[in-house]
Length: 102
Image (cartoon, helix red, strand yellow):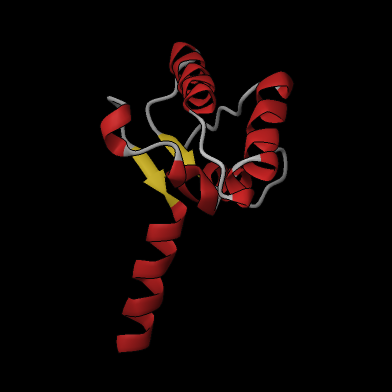
């Protein structure tokens, strides 16, 4: 999240202000992904933590949430949050199919 993979492009190419979770929140996100979701473990408590992070981002001005890791959609769905969620896995899959069909 600290790198320019998404952040730089969103800022430079689209003029979108990017708000990232705090260092502590990034640790929570990382730990849930690698210690649970990658192992097929899905916990309600972890979902609640993610929703808290999303709420904190909203309080800091976020108007949408990018789910930038394929596993996050195992926890968070659009119906869980009342702001737009951008699932990069789905976005990439749609783009790949469109490119393949050109």
